[in-house]
Length: 342
Image 1 (cartoon, rainbow, N blue to C red):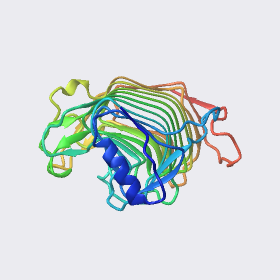
Image 2: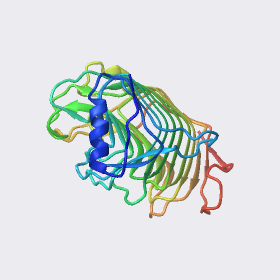
Image 3: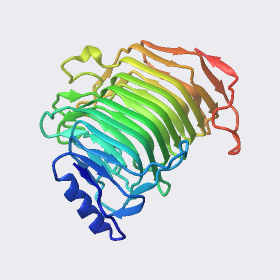
Image 4: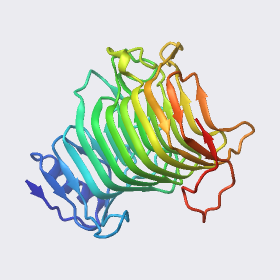
């Protein structure tokens, strides 16, 4: 069934109309052109296609439909809670949010999955997100897109993100009341594809934490404090039944970073300190490559490096180019770099 709701200037009414549509049997939700405020986020069950208005011939330009949340609960604008979901041709403006260090799935424009679970969840699979624009220019405390916990077979393509903390945060999830009382099992995003990502004016472009079978290629990360991080997670693979797959089959390629932060453009780490018991453990990567990336900029702190590697056994660096120089805002994001590393 196709739903074509009529939206107006009342944020409460708009959210009521959209919630009522999403409470029906799964179908297609086609949103009209324009910018519409909603007074809180929306939960997207499995089976739904949500589509805004595509601007013909825009060549990466902004979509014709925008949803702007005015809520203060920390709910994502769109929280994908089931499988077989497609979101496309849509602009999203989350409200200001400061969810804290362990609130990466809160206050976002889009969250798929969850960080913490009361009991082992069903996996969310077959989610496709493309031609989505996100703006949060008023603060840099919350992430913009979060893939968390029990999610796999997710495709992100042609995303434009401005502002926020991390553009795309990919993080493991776990059963537990909070990060210090995790009992396990843990759930690790996998079979993910992220292509054609553009992030600007954010703290960070993207990160991958305790994942496997992930491909990220073709990203422009501009005017960020740091480009991207590959992380093992606080508990690495201690609580997952099939620990041998975590940290395998990861390919990060063709990433352009223009950075100006205090410490690094890229961090690659293989150790984590658990907040459950303080134990330090290491994750050994396999079939993991970072290649053909271009890093331009310089750190502002006393000690900095374009690429920082911390006990990350098994990660291959190949044909990554570095230019340590000040960058004019008028220069293109991805100029030819000068120093080859790896």
